[in-house]
Image 1 (cartoon, one colour):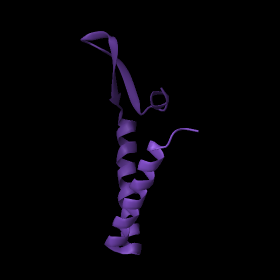
Image 2 (cartoon, helix red, strand yellow):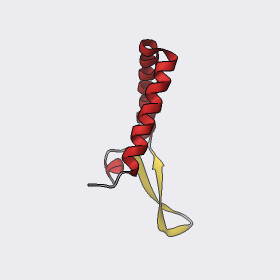
Image 3 (cartoon, rainbow, N blue to C red):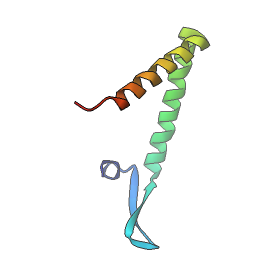
Image 4 (tube, rainbow, N blue to C red):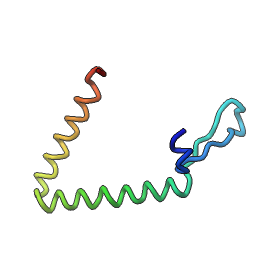
Length: 76
């Protein structure tokens, strides 16, 4: 609902199933994804420039490990 309100996705009735809605990315949503991709690419470039390829790989490995741990921990 928030993404619809923000204009990133549009919900339309499914023409083949009256009970369902189709969720489609809007132009604004696509621009947001494109911008995010540019930001992530630049951050990765900066990390690699600072830490080198091995350091960037290690940071990524540790972040994935932290995310895995957080997603498997019970909610408090």
